[in-house]
Each structure stands twice: as C-alpha cells, then as structure tokens.
Image (cartoon, rainbow over all chains, first blue to last red; front, side, top):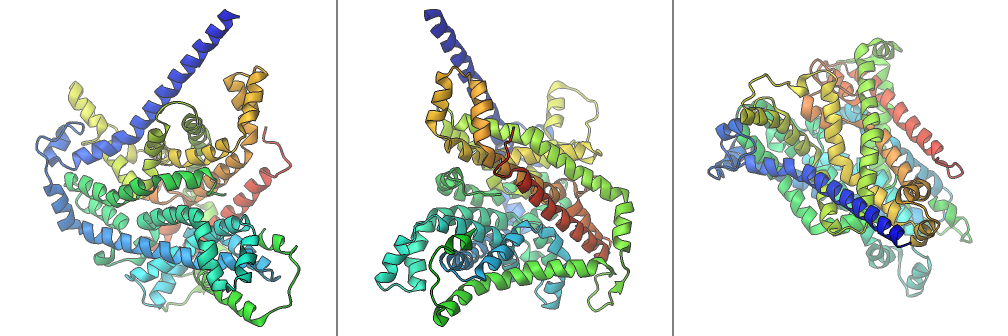
Length: 283
Length: 306
C-alpha cells in the first residue's frame, strides 16, 4: 500500500515536470521572436547582418525616426487606429440594435432575417473583392477611410449579431417585463437595461473586431492607392519590399505597429480570457 | 434559434409603432449586409460568366462557362487547392494537439498559468502582417537566425532561402500560422475544459482511471462542442487564408505558394482577368458554404465523436 502511494506520487511528479517543461518551452517559442525583433529595432544594419541575436552595442532610436520619415509610420498607424475604432463602435451599435429586435420581438419575419445574417457568416469575404472594388470606383470612394470602415463593419456584422443574439437569449425576460412596467420604452430598455448586462460579450467581440480591423490587409490593398491613406499592414509590406536593404528601420516599424495592440492587450487581457473561457467564440 | 423561442410567447396584436421601431432598429444592419455582402456575391456570380478587364465602362462580354473550364484545367488552381489542404492538415495534425495540450496546461494546477496564458495569446494580438514580417526577418538567409548561427560556428555553406523554395515555403507559412493561432485555439479548448464538471473527473479518478485514460475517455468526449468550433474555424479559415501567405511569399515564386484567395486577387489585380477572378470567388463561396454545412452535419448532436 505504502509502496503504491509512493509510486503514484512519483508519476504525478514526472507528469508535473513534463507540464512545466512544455509550458516553458512554448512560452520561450512565443516570446523569443518578439524579443529578437525588439532588440534588432535598436541595432544598426551592420550589427543585424553580423549577429541577429546580440544585444545592441548602442541603442539606436534613429531607426524609429527613419521608419517614421520614409514610411510615414505614425500616420499609417493613426489611420489604422482610426479605422479600427470607428469599425468597433459602429459594429457594436448597429449589431446590438439588430440583436435586440431579433432576440426580444416575436414577428414571424424575424426568423428569415436571422437566417439572412447566418448566411452572411458563411460567406468568405474574399469573394466580394472585385464587386467591392467596383462599388468603390463607381462611388469615387477609393482612398476614403470611411468607406473602408463600412466594408469592415459589413464583414463583422453577421458574426457579431449571431453572438449578441445568443447572449441576449440567455438573459431572462423578467428583467424586460419589470422595466416595461416601470415605463421603459424600447430605446431605454436596450441602452439602460440590456446594454450593461451584455457588456462582457460586447467587450470581447469588440476587442476581436478591433484586432481584425487594425491589421486587415486585402481590402486596404485594393481600396487605398494613395500612400497618405495606407493602413499600417499595407505600409509595412510596402516598406519592406521597397527598402529591402535598410532592415533595421523595418524591424522598428514592425515594433511600432504592434505597440498599440500590446497596450490594448495589457489593459484588456483579463477581459479577453474571461470572455473566451465563457465560450464567446462560436463556429 | 432566436425567434423559435419567441414563438412560445403569446402573440400580441401587431402594434404599428412597435413594428416601425423594430424595422428602424434592424435597418442599418440589413442595409450594410445587403450592399456589401449580398449584392457583391450576386455580382460575383454575374461576372463569373463574363470576360472583363476591369476598366470602368468597358463592356462585359458573356462567355458562358469558359472561366470555370479554364480554372479547372489550370494546374495552378489545383496547386492552390493543395496548398489550402496543407493548411487544413497542419491545422488538424499540429495546431489541434498543440492547442489542446496548451489548454490542458493552463487549466491544470501548475503555478504561473496566468503568465503562460498571457504569453501564449500574445501572437494573435500582434496582427497577421506584423507576425508574418517578423518571421520573414527570422528566416531571411542574409541576416536571419540560421545565418547568425552559421556566423557563430564559422559555417560558410550557403543557406536555403526557405520562403523561396516550392512546397517548403507553404509548410513554413503553415507553421507560422500555427505559432500565431495556438494561443487563440487554446482558449477555445480551455472554454470546453472549464465547463466540464469537476466531479466527473473525480469519479473517473476514483474508478482508477489514469490521467491519460481520463483525457481520452472522459474529457475529449465531453468537449465535442469545442472540437466542433475548432474544426469549423479551421476548415473555413483554410480556404480563406490570404494575409499571412501574401505577407511572407506574395504567393510566389511563380504563384506556387498561392491559395485560392490569392489566385482570386492576382487574377483580378495583376492580370486584369476580372471575370476569371469572379469565377474563383464563386468557387470559394461554394466551398465555404458547403464545408461549413458538412462540418456542422458531422458534429450533429446525436452523433458520438469517437
């Protein structure tokens, strides 16, 4: 008996050691390239050619200045942040308005509207590339950040409505009834009562919409032709193919591009984890 | 799903004011989706039977099924499909076990799980293009990691430019993709793991099930929904993959690392074959919708996973 417990404890121990080893190895794998990139962004081109892994001899902030000067880094990051913020706000507002009706009203036609949005979830966005390019040409909307925002809102809409309706359906209707008896109309019921309750799902989805809109590539490639309006992804790619010899500023640009995202992550990582662990992502 | 539940509610007489409000609330979402999803899909169908060079105002000549026939005869199309298949294989063979393992890890009792969770999820936050460029730098033959190691050890043999080598480059991108999304899928599996009642596991342990047996016979069957979500995201993601390949290889050399969505882009915006590109769009759409429905069917409620 004693021997058995001893043996058991031993297997538990090796199991734990394997878990720790795996945990540390994968943490190293995720952090290492990011760390090297940050280091390289402070080195000179020659140092990078000589040894990518070394510490910088002298911490050169000039790479950042040069990325900003040649590739307009700050401006493109600003463009992307602008697009991402507007997309997130518009998606949340328009999405929750529709979700409220789909979840709370009982008209027969709503079933078809719900189906309509579900079909939207399945459409691969790239098959709308050529027609959307045509719409932009016809409306003279190329190089228009607001147009890009509307396109992104459309792509995220179905998924958002699907999630919001699912969440609202799980909220008991007694709350609505109490609010209606107190004299609440639809508008107040949605914004004063249901909106605060839905905050967890809204916040989690908002973060994912924000990431998607901030780093989207294809549509910003076809809709933006003037480098003043490039989004950050587009500008980074352009920079790395045009100035392929000048590598240190490229590292600096990549680091600059993910600074806003890292800040958002540091602030919201608990929200993301909580939201996802409660099953915010659905197929 | 939503309106189904409402059926139970006693139907009120239709109140015109209430109906107006409902329509007003729904209108923005419906208009945006119609103009930017439904209309473009219809337009893609229309264009896929025509020949057009993309010039505004130039006639779109009807050519029947020619675009589709040319695509199905094109070796590059089948090559692109194969590349998408590599992404799918990578997803199920590498990403799924990795993400599931990480999920077990962060829900286990070891110390520092919140630190590990934060690290693992980080790559998704950085954005696809930034991740792709970062790895392109790491893999560069002139200054990348292998070059540095050669410099340190005095090795002077030439270094393989992996992103310029046929087939190998697709697999490299697949691996970078798994690196990026491991943390994201980890949280999908972790959501399934934390939803399993603790006493089920304890009961299995009391019955003498080892750790591995508990995972195989208790945990995995109870996590059907997580596997379903993973499978749908993975399968539909594979035919849609664009950004990460484009940023790392531009679909090259000579289009061999293209996926269907990259072919769609290059046909239209490099070769000015807008009709052909639209036919690619229709193929993507049919694949996307049928694969989502098939996967959903495979994970039906009444079927056991294994």
